Length: 479
Ligand SMILES: [Zn+2]
Image 1 (cartoon, rainbow, N blue to C red):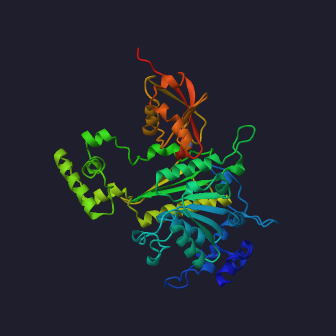
Image 2 (cartoon, protein in one colour):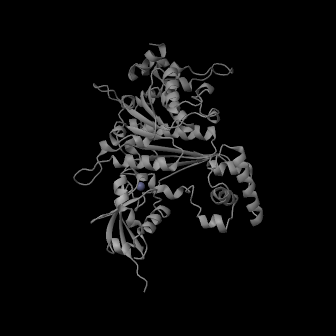
Image 3 (tube, rainbow, N blue to C red):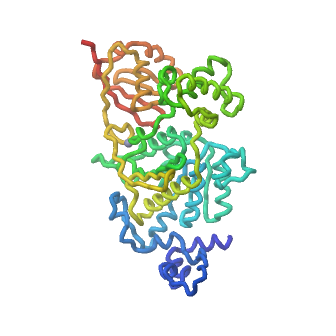
């Protein structure tokens, strides 16, 4: 065992008295400098660790905040339970080992009270990651992010036990997610965040009065960055708003209707999308556009410039073309650092109750100066994930089932692959294949042949894990 391991594994109360002069961190910080020379930085022993914070009384314990989910206890009882042991014994899930994930793992390790972490990521390391994903070296290129990140942390910080999982979050079941005390998400795509949010919300169980049972609520801390902007939020499933409640705040990546791209382009992105989505398949019907091929990208750029010239739209550049085609979100290391620090801070607070939790949303803007804003993101009354709500939809009885499904994908729910059943029969199921085949013919049937007006339909979609949407469809007849 190394020296650092033995020092970290000491009891928190012991650290209070032995690590700091006079057992008092304030005394160290406030001590006046005896000379005008620059003060020597505090050593790790002198500065203490997060244990110091967790083993002191706080007038700002979680119970006095606006989201009181637990009471802070700084004392160490006979069972060794204290704010710090709550954190120490907690298993934490970090989803994503990219720009945010590396920062999150480093912060958890440097807190020195966290031990058990599982990190999930399906990506492998690309050479372009190395400038900010600092747990990786050039020799790691091509290898699993989760595996390299956990290996780095476990070696450098021997008190940590980080277990990697290289794969999709969707491959793990509810039992897997249930073992964690908090989930920190550093994902860069909205679809995976929706799925994770659906899964964590579904783990909540209710008592006989219909109230959520506290022990089944796993806080989800969600971080996201885009360029110089970022956000961090605390989701207490079924208590606060969830990720799905705020879906409107995210512009869907493929949200520009095809007709705009084809007929009324307004911005350079529309021209690039036209070259990519409409012109490429026409010109090269048997070849998939390769975002990594300079020749392909040059072709798309040139077509986009031609189209932009025709409509008098300035601003189509090669870099923008690359960005649109590869859907690149610019990554800024400092934004990642700030957002993940806030995420880990929130995780520490919900685990130990040592301070007020974020209620519920913090946004950070760093492009023109530095500004952050905290506010309560209200639960959306019609959220399909965290509320029980029956949605009403009025459609002509002549539309086909397929058109209805398309409306569910394009409309506010932004579904990906909906399946739909009524109380009397299965209208359309995507899987298993046998059922898909048996129900496929319903797709072209008018709704009036399949259901009664005002009937309640249940819609499921992989985008929210196992959550279903209840939908009452009434026929709006033309008068
Ligand atoms: Zn919600």
